[in-house]
Image (tube, rainbow, N blue to C red; front, side, top):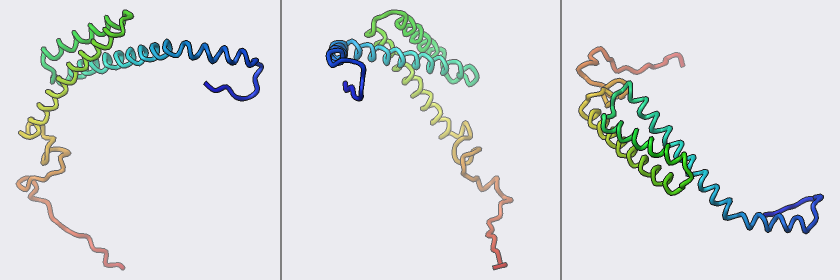
Length: 149
């Protein structure tokens, strides 16, 4: 800690404040770690909850996926009510593992559907950028030349 500038504090007061700050440094570090872990857990609960809510329209999650995620959310919310930081971290990791597994499965399903042409998002589909020659019979390749120069 550095204290600069003019102050109404005496040198003894400044030294006492520095010693207090050093004495409580470990406590401050622990509180910071706990706050970060709780923030991460809250964010993860929000993301998982949002993932489930958004799926209500798309129906991409299986019943098992939803159940595992809802159980993970419930466990983590219970952990956040208490003061056991190790339990919060463990339940955060467990929910994160479930979300990652579900996300990987969804990605694999989307990739397989795109490769099979099932969703039309691949080349040749809407927004895919590709052109299918059989459907573009009216396309004429042309170049505009400005002869006014």
